[in-house]
Image 1 (cartoon, chains in turn orange, blue):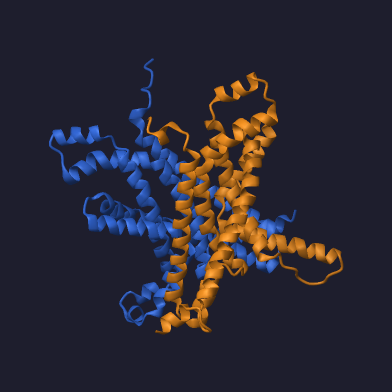
Image 2 (cartoon, chains in turn brown, red):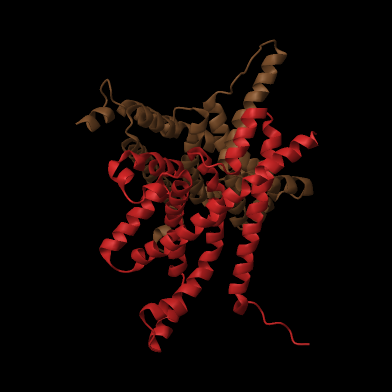
Length: 240
Length: 232
């Protein structure tokens, strides 16, 4: 029954901590997805623009952040950000090392990575809008902002939803790497629990199961969202 | 720009490239074979094997690679049966554990990719093969496998690039490949940007080579789909 005790919610149990850690994992991933959505929109706009320079910069961003290991990017942002903060601290008269908050660094790092994937998703979704609709919108006199809000945004979001669901799953798994910065998310907490109880196998299995629950639950939520977003489409009404 | 530091860093990182390549090639090869086995179980028609393959794919695609790697590296060593078993001299090596977990993980992803390829083989071609008397392994070898592999190749090359990036996790189980060495250099020198730049360029070049090789393979597999050369 020792197993039940270490996993339980009692004094020696890790159950509550693991559940909190799963919440932290969700929070990091959600923050990363939001940051990635902003970055992804900017990069997609750059890649779709007619300016050569912006095109190049957009391609550079997606090539680097999709081609370099996630772990390396997390190191870059955590250590790079920390030394930047330390330099600022020095300028303001504080001696010694200042660390970047690990939640912030982790969410930003995973966000930068997910931004490079979301840029491709948004670009593909924009290109999927039929040219006729854009022309029709201009023809009845919609200016750019109105066209963006009424015609482009709703459709891009619908076409992008399956891709965003993929990116969410990727980010959920990438968020495990944030554990190297010491943030007490699910991976890190499983590691600490495994180390201090010497029950490595048990805690990594439990941690893995919690990840499986997170990924399969979010999969179902995205499936429902997709069905809802497509409810007015012909295939949803059985006409295809 | 401190070129002396940059070139020194690059040399140190290049020394770790063979480890990265060894991790990569071994895990892609073993993972590919394992994926074939799993996809065979998945589409073979036996409900028990198919359920097992589904479970395998669900588990390995649904959880982070890092936790799988730690499970193999720290988790297995906990059991006395394994420590006394014949495989212990292998399983105690971090390199072997890293390859094992990378291969197990990529097998899950690749199996789904291969299944997608198999599903896109036109039923007519299979029917045609059956009508001239092919069945079983011959049908798979001559008709299904070549067509499915060609369809699966674009997604498979993405997966292979992901594997190149995933080898970086081996540094967390003390295998000193490029990312691990880069991390050590960063924590010694605090010159994050320069070290990152050198390591990033190495990975980008490796991935570029892999993608080019895959594109070449794809080209040579789809010769018959290209327009014939115009005769002068």
